Image 1 (tube, rainbow, N blue to C red):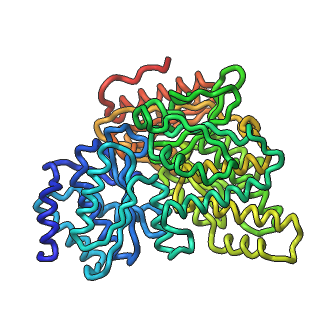
Image 2: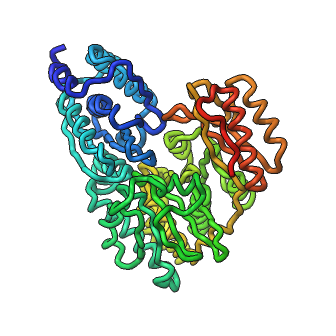
Image 3: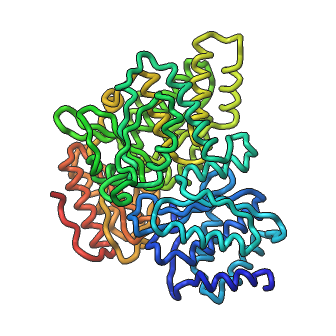
Length: 545
C-alpha cells in the first residue's frame, strides 16, 4: 500500500482511541471534542476520496451546531451544497471506527467499491465555528486532505450555510454565485434591498430587529454584513461573542425547547426578535406581548409565512407552478390544518433530518421545508427559475404580472437553496413582512399553535427504538406504541410520538394537546413509558413544574 505511506505516517499523529465507536448521524459526527481528532483526520481522507469520485469540490464543516461548547462535530457537504449521500455516510462510519492498523484496508475498500481513480484531482473546502477546539480539529482535516494529494481551501470562521453556499458556487462555476464571503454578502443584500423597495411606508421602527447570535459564528458574520444593508434593516445584536458561552442559555434551540427569551436580551413588549443557533443554520422568531406573555414563531410559522407569500406571487404572476410544504412529525398540527384546509397548499411529511426534507422538496416546482426547530429553506426547480426569469424580462405582460415576477426573482436570489441558512432565512422573513406590511403580531395570528412539549429520555441504547410512518409511530420496543395510543386518548386534540436521537443515546418525546397543562402531562407520561419499556437510565423522568 505504497499510496498510503503518508496516511500511515500522519494517522499516527491522529490516532484513534482503541474501542471507541461513533455513528455518522443526521448531523454528521458529534460528541465531546477530545474524542474527535482521529475522526477529523479521517473525514479529510474521505472528503478527498469523495472529491475524486465526483470530480467536484467537497465541503467539510467543523461544528457541533446547537450542542454545548465542549462538544464538536463534522459534516460533509456534497457538490450541490447538500448533505452527503447515505452510502457515503456508511463509509464515514466505517472509516471513523476502523482501528489504527485497519485504516488503510478500510480506505482501500472504499476506493475499490467506488472505483475511484486515485490520480484524479481533489478539492476540499473547509470551514469551522467558534468553538475553542475547532481550530485544531480543522488542522486534522487539512492533514487528511493533504495525505491523499487533495487541494484544500480553508475558509476559517464561517457559518455552516456559508460553506454549503461556497461549495455550490464552486461546482456550478459561478452560476449560483461567487465562492467568497464578499460574494455571499453582496448577493443576499442586493436581493433584500430590491425586495424591500416594494414596502410601503416602511419606518425605521419597523426595520428594527433584535437578534440573539447564540454567542456563535452567526453573530460574527452578521457584524460583517451590517454595512451591506444600507439602512434597509437595523439589527440590534445580543449574545454577540463578546462575552458569554456558546449556546448557553441562548440560541434558537434554547428558545424553542424552553419557550422563553434568551438570557441577555433586553426586549420591549411587541418588539420583533429572533435567535440563531451556534452555526447559524437555524432561526426562530418571538416576541413578548403587552401582558408579558411569550410568543414563539418557529419553523412551522416560518414555512407558513414564506409558502403563502410565494403562492400569492405565483397566482399574481399567472405561473403554473406547484408549491408544496414539507414537514416532519414535529410540525404543529395547527400549521398542517391551516396550510391544507385554508391555503390549499400541498403538505407532505417525511422523516426528521434535513436530508429527508431536502430530498422531498426537490419533487416539486417550489418546495418549502422547515423543521419545527427553524432549520429550512426553499428549493426552486430549474423549470420554475426559468419561468420566473422569462416572465420578469417579458415586456409584453401586465404590470401586475411583471411586478410579481420581479419579486419572485429577487426572492430566489435571497434564498440559500444549498441548505437551511439563518441569515438568508432572516432576510427572507424580514422582506416578506415588509412587502406585506405585516407586523410580527399579525404574522403570529395567522393560526394558533396547539400547546406542545418536547422532552428527552436517556436510554442505554437508542437503537431499541424503531419507527415507521415518517417517525410518527414506534415499531419497537413491543407495547410502546400501544401505550402511547392509550395515553393520547386521555387528552383533547392530542398526539404524541417518540424517536431516537441521531447523535446520542436519548429518545426524543413530542406531545401536543389542547392546553399546555395537558401537553406537559402527556409528554411526561410518554417519557415514563419510554423509560420503562426502552431501557431508561438515570433518574426516572419527573413531572414538569
